[in-house]
Length: 440
Ligand SMILES: C[S@@+](CC[C@H](N)C(=O)[O-])C[C@H]1O[C@@H](n2cnc3c(N)ncnc32)[C@H](O)[C@@H]1O
Image (cartoon, rainbow, N blue to C red; front, side, top):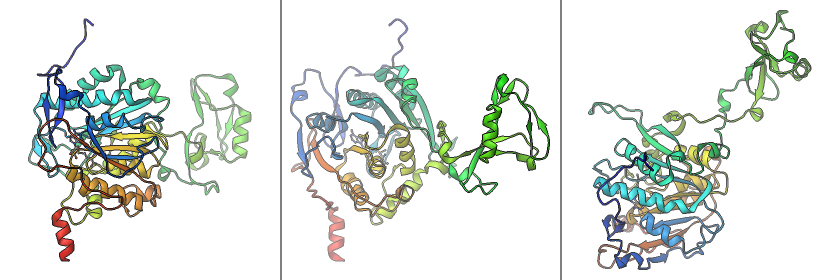
């Protein structure tokens, strides 16, 4: 295409593969190791079937390749992908490094998006959570993989409420890029609206049907059948405003009055308004700016993890379950499949599980899985995770998941490297914790 615009970077055309436990390497397309079978081990021996929830240890691309040989995608394709990859901030966190050379980071992202593409449901959406470090380049990459017509929006999440006075600006937001391969118009017809906040509804006349919201009893344009006199309780005779009509015909208006569905504000002097009860309200179209009061902050997420795991230093960059709850609510219905290939502490899977969605999640760092992801998901199932969205959803436990381990094809592994010994319900603790427990 003559007017095509493309982001270019060194080695863009070379395959980039996970190498060793935590790095990547460029390989030549002719490298014979590319076709070597991956070593996959089932940790919780399960069937990895069409109804399974899966926690996998390994690189996201390697695990997706391995999972294609199971039947996890046989019935359902993926309705929602949410990924929160390392942002490439140049920092080093307790659980993972975040300092890839830019070409490597870009290929890393592009390859994972490309690997996700064939397993997407026709109504799928892909949400990529980033900050200012790479978000503008990531958008160009997503345009390239999914086409710019697949762009839906970018959501700005207020991730903190405290001020950091060291920089020129105290950054308190992340950006989540939302793409839908079917395009925003088609996707809009299948996505869910937000629930109207019933807390904002009032019951100003003690209506036994409960609290209500209200809307003007007018409609745009001139419609003859909807031009008539309305007499307010205080005796004022009203006509519709200029170039508008009443919302319904006189007969319907009278029926609504009989049903106590019309409200006259200003002590009975105001223009009529229609009362709308919760069951009659359409949901709300989501805004693109999401405040911390609605969906929590990074610190809220850390506090939740600290309550779950008080004896270890907290996971550095968890996202709040309230944020994931909103994303999963908008993008999926109960029973549908949610995928996150940068699991970290497991927020996506934990929230999806509590919301009755099926999930698959992948984390590369074995110690992160042992410390956080596995025990957290186990506690969701046991019903002993009392934080996050547990109370609002009335979650009390249940369900199951299976675990697998995929060894990378490239790089050198530590001597004696083998999949961790995890058995159902028993997470292998760190040696130091095991010793501490014995001593105690
Ligand atoms: C920002 S954190 C995700 C945090 C997560 N959303 C949460 O709420 O806890 C990114 C995670 O991706 C993992 N990761 C990095 N590269 C990966 C790869 N190639 N495959 C799978 N996981 C990877 C890191 O180890 C880290 O735990």
